[in-house]
Image (tube, rainbow, N blue to C red; front, side, top):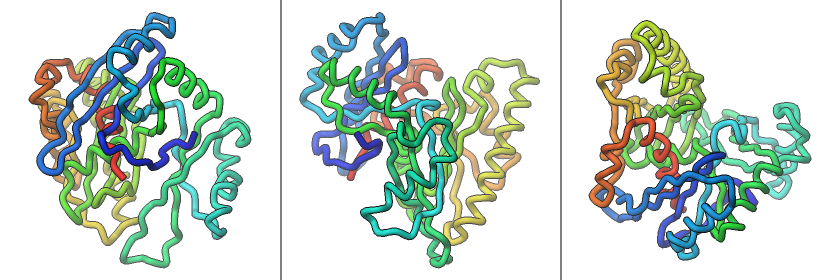
Length: 311
């Protein structure tokens, strides 16, 4: 199975995110105007047997939908390579050869997929770059077997960077660069988009607990590191894509009272704002989502992004 392959899902996607001990399943109702509406959002514990997932599949009638599964951080690598000058039918094999020294396992044991980085309109001679998502064949096969054995009709395996791109599309301004920053228990994810295209993505090694649960001194240290990484990435984006005027940086879900928004606003070259789930979605059928702790909301966030897949 390819990773972020394109296909059509006229009734919307059922998005699944799997951890060793739990699974979340979400569905978002696509709309032509206004905010997409969350119509399904469930987190279930896995009891170590496949029966828990099979029961969930029966309860949700998953066979009615196309299913997209989100990989988690650490289950894949996202590399940037220069596009090889080869015919299109040779591109994948040429890219496979290029990434063989950038991964820590044999390239013959890798599943990979490719996404073009948009060109800068002011620099058309700049070399085309590609994002290459790489995962171990064994992991992809295990995830396929787990879901298909439970009768989830798996169509696509997706990655967090593209899920976050889908979220950014909901709130970015036309023809303006938009930076979106999110955090979970494994770290941070910073994406730069414009007009629905992913231009740049970077992982941050500061995790949500360091922002929410540490002492003021430790939190201040975490904020300093975040600000430094974000500003360096903004500077890199500005150098690489000079034709795109940056609009703002948005921090997903992190409450303003934790202090991160104010700290970044005082230390970055972009306007900074914090956005809750209700900025992205119509929660009228899932009002209880707003009552969940931030640690729980963030586990759903990128799954919602996968459910927004459109072609």
